[in-house]
Length: 569
Ligand code: 9MR
Image (cartoon, rainbow, N blue to C red; front, side, top):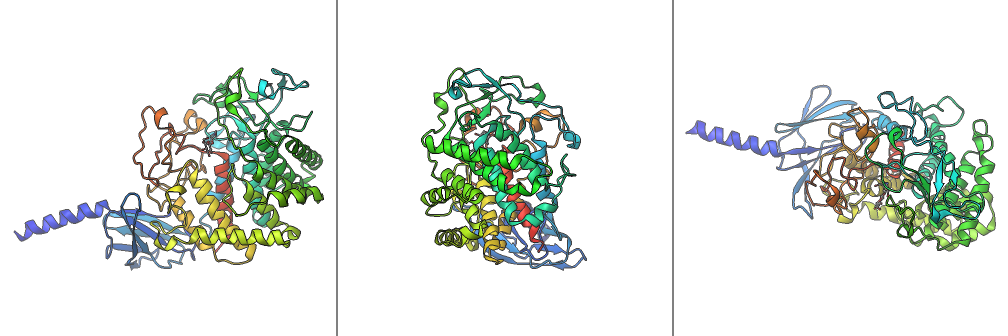
């Protein structure tokens, strides 16, 4: 009888413990970073064991519980303690185990991979330094047609122009000015506050041996393309370079649809002006490698801005395009105030012309918001924060207060959150591209705020978002390809799907949980496993709304992870 009871209890215990799931940062932690795991499924009190690299066994307790406001699931938050010696820690809860790495530079490899990804997605050249990911040239874009929506007397519809290079935007093969300019702008903002770090960062690209930092070389590959998107006759900038419809899942060299430049837009033109002004300023020390660029970029930026002033309501309206109609990404935006703010601020920093300062003052925002392709006002604020003269003005001081108010608001729910992180506590945190636009960008701003004010106040919270991103979350995914023990294998990324390599390109951040599920009706086989905001994710190549990759998302990953790696704490 006793034996039977014992075996029933043992059996029950094993069921309970096998339900326990450990959510943890699968990439690694700094020695002085907080080491928290989250256990789901069963209360692990008394069952958590940590074997240190020296073989000592620790028995940490549950710090608190939190119930998910939308799924009702209970999460147990366990602080493992300091664990400050470097090495591998074996953490177990019942029969579940994981390996937590503590290292001096835990984010070094993943930070580098996040930037190197941009090399792998270069268009118009053969990839020859990509190892298993080498591929022949595709999309030369030396014969791109002017779409009727972009026609002028000088360039009637059907005129062929050359518009090579640049990065592919995302899972698709098109090149979009709004997103390209934003991505570079964000990485420039990161670069400006951490030049020492970036000047040493080597991403093994063809330009690594020149005199320019690799980050700037990589940006130049896309800037060269951006310059071709400006109409030389009037200074306006085409909204995008695109095929009429998305290509199939084939390699670049196998794509043969005609490519077009389509309508000029005020948002693309202002983003172009902002990023060219930044580039003209930041490439000034790189004349050896890029002798004519500063003059060219300065002129291009000023002309673009002028065009935008003359066409303030030229918003991109894809539904109006015909002969052919176009169904690819829109990057549509009906408000250009934030783009005016960024572009005029960047142009003022470059030229010190009063007219740009007047405009920047007029267009500045009332509050700081997370940088995104659709709202670039943060990039304008970063211009003010990085410029000694602007930062010290009344407006500059006000903007600094707004950044700090944003940070305070971001961290206020950490103590009651399910995953001990600023990101992920509100259903609105989740959506298309949320891991970049909300998680990484928020963390980047927290680290940026520390640099700005000379404190270390917010780094703890930024690191918590890293924990979330890299595995301490509701799905248990480390959302960056090639890192962690459970990471996306089937991103919505044409090259990764069509090449003969099983693993996707490393260093790609997927969009992440998206309860909007806008792709649901297009998915033939895949089915979302859950409708809960933070679990609405599927690692399937059909899922463009939760599992795509994109340059703006990887730009936020670069900004965030490189700052983390630069902390060296
Ligand atoms: O990142 C964009 C997201 O904010 C939008 O909600 C979504 C739908 O318009 O489009 C996303 O951008 C896509 C672009 O339009 C085309 N290339 C792939 C991009 C990532 O999904």
